[in-house]
Image (cartoon, rainbow, N blue to C red; front, side, top):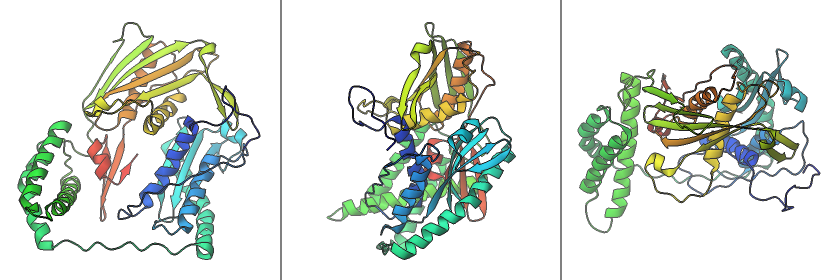
Length: 429
């Protein structure tokens, strides 16, 4: 696509490199929320770079291209969505910047815009004011309108008739009410007890199994009824958790919406590393190390836009034991690559310039336990490990995961979300 021969021993493209994996996740985050929950068909979207222009980022184009392909297809989908890159250069906003403008940018955002608002935001800033970020998002929304209008016109001209999803008849309201009322007293007690993650999971699972056994009965249709009871129970659980948040500002671990879980940290706890930190927030913990090397340790990255050298690397590991599971070790997955990149970008702009600190820096974060916000624990632990290694960073960086619950006109913003709140909420930021 760029008129280049691949380097290395194998002169053909192999598995997707990190950049391709990150782009795939970028596109996925824009498209996935717009599929109706009732659409269960396996769906695969492939974006292929056929020709490459250094001044036209293929990752951003991939969002719009994937949106268009999905929008004109017969799949039920609530698109379209347009991908917009907006940067701030010399105090002004620029859409679809050139390579040179991206290099000089103090703010660099990729924004996915739908007709109703924002679907996804990703980016980095050189410590710009919050108001500037808001202005950039509004600027991106306006710039996306011609793309959205164009996709609607193409849909009118060549779009296939959308599949009409078969409506699943609702369950007998009286039966649903009986199940909910049977679960209500004990479920409310469990959700208000402020339990830790595994204790909460165990209690809910025990109650769910009791309710399923009670209402599924016996006979040929018992297995099918058990599925329905399970679905009704899980919907009721979601409704109760969201209701507690909206009506009472109460979370399942006992916190209010603005409360942060207890934080603790330690540095220098590993005797042989250049820098180390142990960062804990609630039931999420990151074991972070920092290693310093010479220029010969820089990572050589071969991409469409040429060969580059990275003097700062951050690798994030999420072993299955951190969530009490048993899985085969297959190397870093898409999630680990994505979360590692997220944390690296948070720390990248505070790492000292090579002329001030001429070392190659590698940070490794191993998550020892997780209940939400492990990538942000990596950011906090990474800052501590850098300082412990003696790197003259420009400023410390911290991060928490934010969430949002919306019920009608009521909106609750959640600080430092749990894994359960990530799953049941309406936003993860």
